[in-house]
Amino acid sequence: MSETQRWHVVVRGRVQGVWFRASTREKAIELGLTGWVRNLPDGSVEAEFQGPAEQAKEMRQWLWTGSPLSSVTEVSATPMPPVPGESGFAIRR
Image (spheres, rainbow, N blue to C red):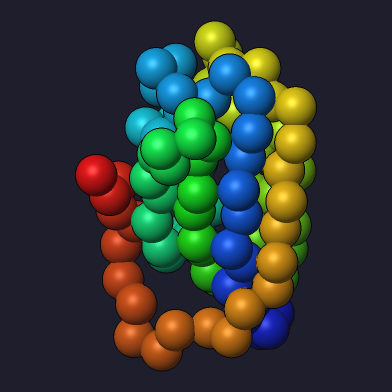
């Protein structure tokens, strides 16, 4: 079994108003990841997700593409300690 990883990410570019949060949630669920995503006041999107290392890596790579209408210019990713017992993937407001 792969080690569980948790990542905090901030995605910049044209990422609000283009279904980025919903697409991120769909991709995370598809990959079996847990966590959350939300818009930030500066126009970026922030997320935390965790799961097996390979799926977490795939999610970090996917964020560079994002939703079909988005235009990502930067993804900053920071590893974090996993959160025990977390379930689901939420869109936070």
